[in-house]
Image (cartoon, rainbow, N blue to C red; front, side, top):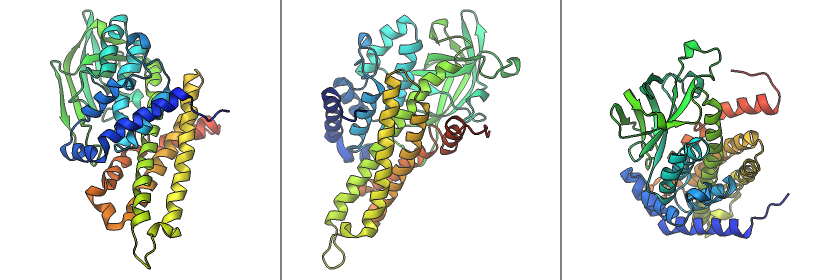
Amino acid sequence: MDFELTAEQAQIADTARKIGARFGLDYWLDHDRRKAYPKEIWQALCEAGLAGASLPEEHGGGGLGMLELALIIENVAAEGAGGTFAQVFMLNPIFGGVAIARYGNAAMKREWLPKLCAGQMYFCMGLTEPDAGTNTLEVRSFAAPDGNGWRLNGRKIWITGVPEADKMLVVARTKKIEEVQRKTDGLTMFMIDVKREGLTHAAIEKLGTNTLASSNVYFDNVRIEGSELIGTLHGGWNELLDVLNTERIVTTAGCVASGRLATRLAVEYAKERKVFRGTPIGAYQGIQFPLAQAHAELECARLMNYKAATLHDQGKPFGSEANTAKLIAAQAASTLIERAMQTMGGMGFARESHLERLYRDARLFKFAPVSEEMILNFIAQHDLGLPRSY
């Protein structure tokens, strides 16, 4: 088993790190305060060829794998963004890029993927519903046949990045749930314009991740053209899972970045801060041990994420590894940020320390995009062979 990065991977990681450092902590402090989408740093990644690193070369991408994408996210976000920037990768190269590259038609690939890679087109995904939540099979938004297309009615909630998006990957029923024998039947994906008659959205006030809006989305007789179908009509369940599975890797990379950033801020402070007898507080085990413990857990999650990404790139099952990595990374990052804040005391509570933003943002990833409880259900059932509990 080889744990060494190739020369190309090391260069990719270093390029991402330098871009992240160029923008830095104050960029994110400002964007968090203004609730502004981080378009400038995303454009810099696009210009460096990193935003579409995992997408096909023939459509403007880098033709690389999920391991390289994880390295990019981790290194760019550890310089100031923290975990929230991973969501931009979910929206664009995953929800937009993976969906189109694997299941889109030739025109979509030819016209939209190059624009995605160049930063000229933004995406979001309409999946979660108020009465379905984690149980995607209970989605009720319905696309009824209408000539050579469909008419969509329904509602989505907690949809990220809607105001800036050009396209939305929508998951809807094309067979009503009461009419199917298996709930996995009758789900379909579409890629539609966000600015379309009958589609409206309203922002949700929330605790953190302020650089990306979260919205309620309403579909009132929205027209969907036949050419906007993604994948298989009525058979989109497994195709949807294929798109969603990679978001675990992206999320973990963001959590690892957030933990790394919090650790750096805490260590820098603890080396300089002196309170008793002129000794830096970083010399005290009461400061050292909690940081060291959470750092060890974060490093384990980081390696498990690399394993999950490598298995994905080899075309092998990676669900257990990706779920395990996400579980531990989200927990370890939250603990590291908490301990970093404790290390700084009152200064950790100040906005200028940047930890309070990381603290707010990190809370999301303990239940999104998949909750701790659902991951533990997965591990119990698939890895331990225990009966399904839900």
